[in-house]
Image (cartoon, rainbow, N blue to C red; front, side, top):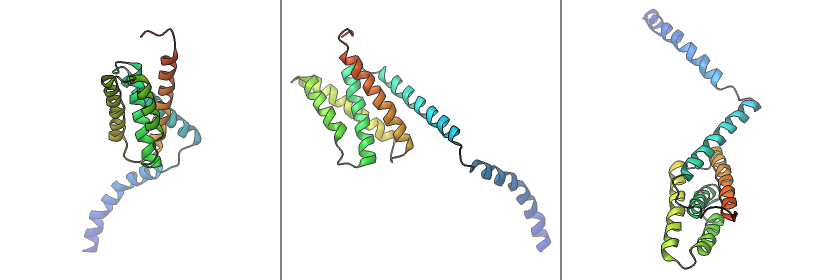
Length: 155
């Protein structure tokens, strides 16, 4: 009986051995260079996603409102729901840009909320991916702000 069991299990163990070896190889820690390359690829992918999303916005101010909504969600995800830093910035920006125009304010709030919920669908916990997205969004926000401040831009 034992020899029959050995006959059936030995081939299974032999077939599984290459898989164990692959698992051992996969568990090798990444070198610093590999980590940098992975981080760079992740950052480039996040920046590309943010840039592609910009194309759908009808105005730079709406794009900035959406950007602030995205960063607001990610910050509250990592620092807790009481951290309202980016929401407060968004509120100030919307107050300035809408200047009493209820329709304009509604558009900006809609853009802010769209950004918030877009990131809420993408991320459920604070991670390195969140850090990469925050860096890309911060760069995008800086770029939008620079364009908004350009006196020669088309309106």
